[in-house]
Image (cartoon, rainbow, N blue to C red; front, side):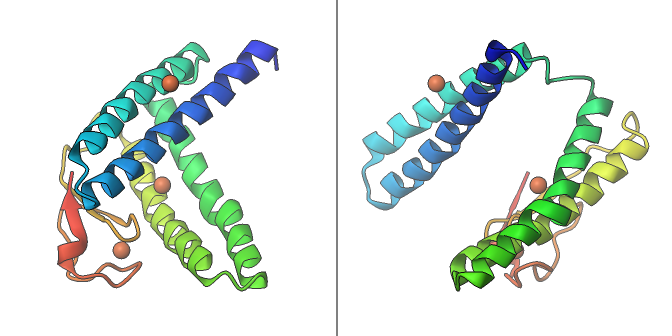
Length: 163
Ligand code: FE2
Ligand code: FE2
Ligand code: FE2
C-alpha cells in the first residue's frame, strides 16, 4: 500500500472518530445545558464528516450500491463472528463487565444488520423504502414494525427511534 493510500485510510478513520466523538460531546454539553458548546460540537461533527467522506471517496472505497452492500455485509459478519467475540472474551478475562455488555450488545445488533444487508442484496433494485426502528441502548435495528421489546437488550418501545 502506498503511503498516500495508507494516509487516506488513517485520515478517514481519524475524521470518522472525531465525528462520533464530537456528537457524544454535543450530547454531554446539552445535558450540562451548555447549548452554545453543544452547537459548536454539532457543527464540527458535520465538518469532520465532510473530511471523512472525501478521504474515503478519494481512496476509491465508495463503489456501486451492490458492492457497498456486499462490503457492509462482510464487515457486519466479520464483527459478529470474529471481532466482537474476541473482545467479549478479553473483557471477561479482565472482569470488565460494562465493556463486555457494550461489546455483546453491539455483536448481537450487528447480526441483525448483516441480515438486513443480506435481504437488500438479494434484489437491491426492488428493496423497499421502509421505516427502521433503532434501539438507542444497543443499536438493534428493526425493519418496518417496532418490536414490543428489544430482542437484544430487552428495552421497551420508549428506547426506539425511527429512521
Ligand atoms: Fe477534520
Ligand atoms: Fe452494524
Ligand atoms: Fe436494544
